[in-house]
Length: 154
Image 1 (cartoon, helix red, strand yellow):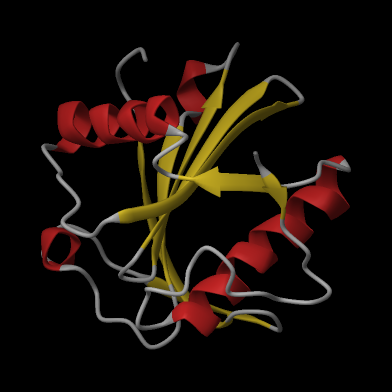
Image 2 (cartoon, one colour):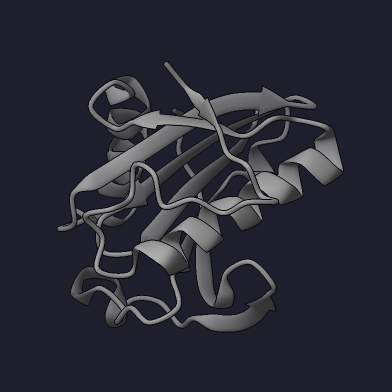
């Protein structure tokens, strides 16, 4: 059963095994606040074990687009559609969050985003391939992020 992420009271529920659980919870809450404020969408996540289709879709895009395989274990995932954009998120035990933004009608704006929780190292599989920019968040501290444009159809 998906759980709505409460961004006013940040909880590590579902993320407890992460060595950066409080920062990852803040990152998850930051995303929930964004979607609530921009689209009035309640950001709800469920165990990655239950959201296997979402995790597999995201992993397929990473593998086929860039030959990437994420070493960390997925903890939670979500998939939803807002204003014609299919979105998917996977939150990993390492503190990594990956999202896929997949507009249905505009292939030029399809992208994969990577966000690193405060306090985590850049994963080895991403370190040599991406540069990460920093942004501050009241909920998540310092977030480092990067992205790439999706070229294929998924």
